[in-house]
Image (cartoon, rainbow, N blue to C red):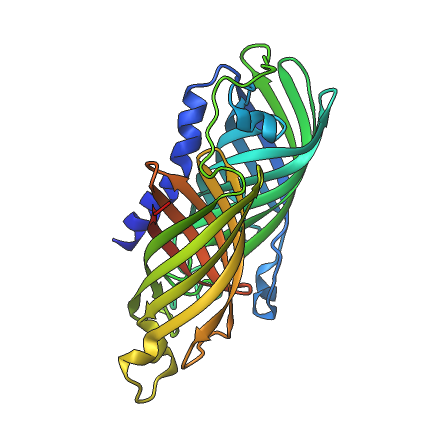
Length: 360
C-alpha cells in the first residue's frame, strides 16, 4: 500500500507537464549521457564510493512557443518528460536505477540562440539494491526499491532552428521520505552533454493569446492544507507510523515570479513518543510550528522552498528548525494538490501529501 501511494503521488507531479507535451507543436527528442560520482555526505557512507557513476536520459521535450504569457515571463522555458538509467557507482551494494521524471529548464538569460539557466525535475526511481540485514547490510542509505528523484542543475546551451546542443552540471538526489529506513539519501553530482532534435522548425509568438494568473499581483490569499503521511523510525525494519497535519497559510504575490508565504502548522506525529521511548502520553506527539517560504508561480503550478521553527515541540526528536521543499498544482480554481518533503536540515522527516482549499 505504501509503495502504491508513493507511485500515485509522484506520477501526479508528472501529469501537468505530460498534458502540455501532448498539446505542443514544438516537440522534439533528446539524449543526455552523463558521468558523475556518489557524494558521501556522511562519514558512514564513505565505504560506498567505489567507482564513477554513469547515466543516460532520453527525453520528450517541448520548446514553449509564446502562446501563453508565462512562456514570455520565463524566457521561453523548455519542458521535459524523460526516462533515465543510472549506474550508482557500486553495483554490488547500491545497484542501478531506472525511472522517469518531468522537469523544466528556466533560462536566466537568452540571446541569439544562446542561453544559460536552471534545470529542475521530479520523478520516480526504481533502485535495484536496497538495504537488507542479511543479504545487503552494507547498504546503509536506501531502504526501499521505490524512491522519489529530485534533479537540479545549471545548463548552458545553443539553440538552432531544429537542434539544441548543451552541457549541464547537475545533482540527482534519491529519497523515499523516510517511509522505509534507512534513508540517508543518495546524492550524485553529474556532468552531461545534451543533444535535442525537434520534428519541426521552432516557432515563437511575439504576443500571448492565453494567460492564467492564480493570484493577481499585490493580492493576498488565504489557504488551508490538510496533510497525511507515513514514516518509519529506527531501528530499521520497525513499525510504520502515521502523520496528520493541518496548515493554515497566507500568500502575497509580490511579482510575476515571486510569492511570499507564511503559515502555521499543527502536527500529530505518532512516531515521536515511540522514538523517545519512556512513559510519555500521546499528547507529546503534538507539534506546532511557524514557517516562511518563497514560492515560484509557474502557470498552474507553484514551486516552494521554506524554513520554519517549532513553537510547541515537547520531546524535540529532530531539533527546532524544519524545512519544506516541493510543489503544488491546481486541480480546480479553489482546490490544489500538494507534494512537498519536510526535513530537518539534510535529514528527511516525511513527505507531505495533501489537498489545499483556497478561501480567497
